[in-house]
Image (cartoon, rainbow, N blue to C red; front, side, top):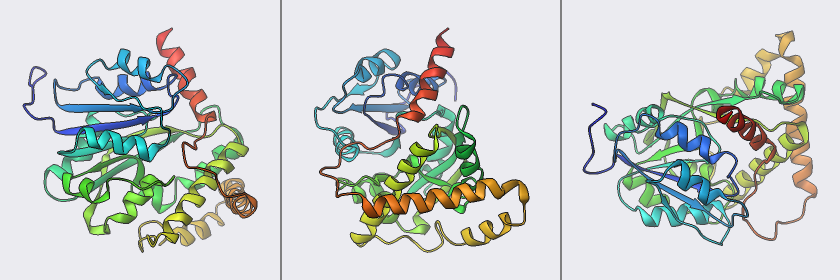
Length: 299
């Protein structure tokens, strides 16, 4: 493949839902499009209920993208709009605050293009720069979990046309990635280790607990909907890994934080009221790192 090669039909559609991501979406798109061949990927970005210049920042960073603005908030709603605009071919769902390249996308869709899988996920690195010691300790343990080491089905997901047709339109859930995960069988999914993307961790312990509470709430709703966690996809050796950590003193602080965050998330979920509506629920503290990085890149 040469730099001058063009594609009559895009290899895949990249769908990016975005809510108030003006500070970081330029970074995401710059990394994604560097080295991308003309017409290799179709780009659809859906700013929804934004109160900032997300749409303008996306247009400036990626003029070839189709921008679909909507006043209605909610990630699932935004993703449904984007899929309706590009209903054919492989679909790659990408969160607007992540860092990955065109090569990562090519590695991600390779198992689907080869006919070996209906869906694929990559490997997530968590950037803990500028985070508190407690947050760093938590991710020191989290990164050893099977869910992290054997493919992170979230943040960046590729779906075949058939798989996308089965899971879309998405219901109104906060755990959209996990909904897709549980809607597909284990043998339909592939781990593409050469696809590596970076996410920024919450900066402080309170923000981390809110994130984990949201994850727990979303997963419980999926279970109530009849979508149970698939055996062996996340649990499995988790207990064994935690037991191994008990014999490594350097991990004890992180292990304690990991356990306390889990307890705090469950306690918070037990006392919180029922959300009035599902729109966007995310950690804003992690966007600080993205904004700092963006400023450093432009200086």
